[in-house]
Length: 130
Image 1 (spheres, rainbow, N blue to C red):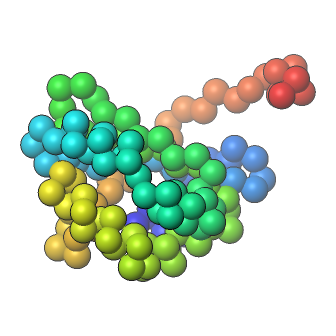
Image 2 (image 1 turned 120 degrees about the horizontal axis):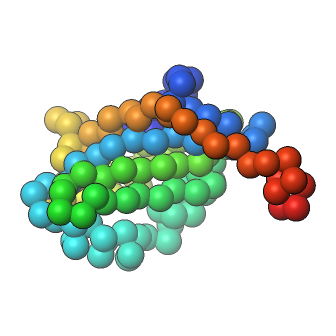
């Protein structure tokens, strides 16, 4: 899950400590409202585990009128997402989400890596103000 530790042109640095990955997933036909509801009610222990594993930001978008999901995750370079993916907590979440997300035979949501094709950097002036 989360494309392991592969480095590709799809990973880009936010700073020296973090990187951003992006990927697509697919909903089971028309399940966006249930998908959204479950994420609105995400288990606090899962959100905490994601943070401990090195996730700094995680956003998931839906193209209206489709079953396509687009996820963007900023994570620490030394993340432990592979260990989280092997945990019973993560598998319980994926089991619960299997009726709304297209999964592989292993029950893990199918993620299709997206490669970055453009990156507008902050100007030095703006970066110094942040």
